[in-house]
Length: 122
Length: 162
Image 1: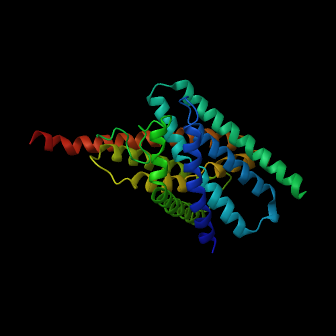
Image 2 (image 1 turned 45 degrees about the vertical axis):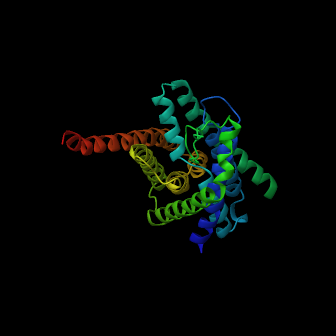
Image 3 (image 1 turned 30 degrees about the horizontal axis):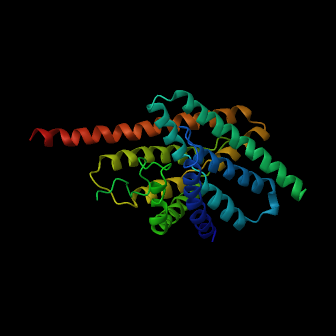
């Protein structure tokens, strides 16, 4: 049952990542992979919100939205690959910026998610 | 009339600033999205099973660390292999790269676990986890790409001389 929920959430999350990435990447000129940054930050915000709700979220909802949707909406493989490609292209500043912005913004998003969820369910 | 615009749905050479190039999104919509959705489901289920069977002992989130590092190794191998092939199925990268590996690895759990390590009084472990995953994943991508290049060279070497 848990596995089915994870699969369903991921079947929506993964295409949502692809579509968001394409939409974002077609709208800017910089070398920064803003599409991947966007999905990683949004997914971290939602997962932070789910975790902040604590027992207010059932195990199956957590499997569907957390492990499935947020897990598949966000990606580490693309993040590390794009960072490596920036390094290979000698865009060192952009590579460092990609790591710092991705990690920093995702952490901030988790904090905001937790806080918003605590305020709503409090 | 020669077709100057690639139809490969994930061709990195497609210039998305060109409206005609952006049309490839529409043309291959359904099959590409289905490949990504099914690949994502396979990847996420694998992540769930790894997390269930590989229960983490201690405060360091080893299972997510290994998932993200191995996924990075595999994306390096995948893209290098696809780059070496004379032709590839147009759904290969959407299914395996965007779908399976994107669904297998996760940034949201990585961020939440780091946050939780700080709030549970393990800021040093959080820092090691945050920086350690970034460095290990980058090394894994390079290792994957280099591995494929070496194998390809060893393979083509004798054949080219024959």
